[in-house]
Image (cartoon, rainbow, N blue to C red; front, top):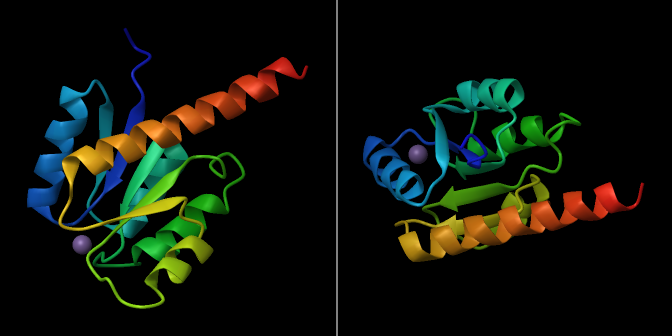
Amino acid sequence: MTDAKRILYIEDNPQNMRLVRKLLKLNGYETLEAVNGEEGVQIAIGEKPDLILMDINLPDIDGLEATRRIKADPSLTNVPVIALTAAAMRGDRERIISAGCDDYLQKPIDTVQMLETVRRHLARIEALSNLLANTD
Ligand code: MN
């Protein structure tokens, strides 16, 4: 089947990349990968993934800027972006949400929580598109 949901993971840490790639594949998702923000934005625009997992601390533009650029593209506005952040500093949540992220998870990655969050947002988007399709 080719209808597997495609998830773009933007992450510069190889260990996290390996862990999440394995987790997603084991659960039937197709993965797209980028190791910096610029590349992540380009792949998002070119591939139109179903969901994006976004590391915040990246070597070039950070995950907040990458999210702003992705959400500025009308064809990507509804694609859920879930931020991954190591910092648990006051004000982070506000910065992340105001950049356009739909949700956020703290590192180290809790695999159960990550899968649950991914499923919840994919279900939300599916419900939204069904609703839009039925109003014609
Ligand atoms: Mn990082």
